Length: 112
Image (cartoon, rainbow, N blue to C red; front, side, top):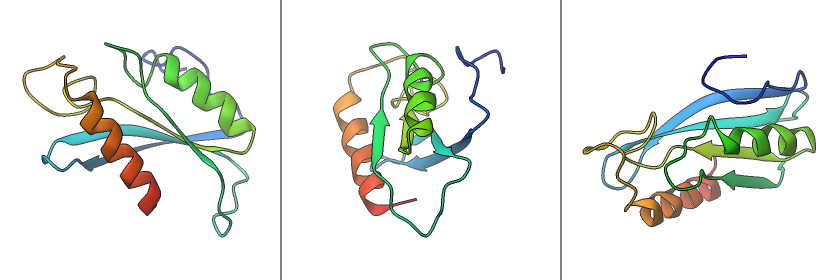
């Protein structure tokens, strides 16, 4: 298990690192969790799991994503702007959470 994640990835789940820029040009880092037997020609229900205040995707969100991917969901976890692997200065500023959540939801609706 990589040191930065708090849970071991289930053998039936894949975790793919993804990123994109939000409307302010700030890179948002995320992890996309899917079942290993995912049929990419089929649409699946999706869940977005953000971290609590001050958290990052490798903490609590990874636990939920790992579990929900085993149950057939496509799950996106992310680091809010200014936190974790996402961009933005100054670091560890959480006032942009609303804009980050809005962008993550818009991106999920448009597909990856």
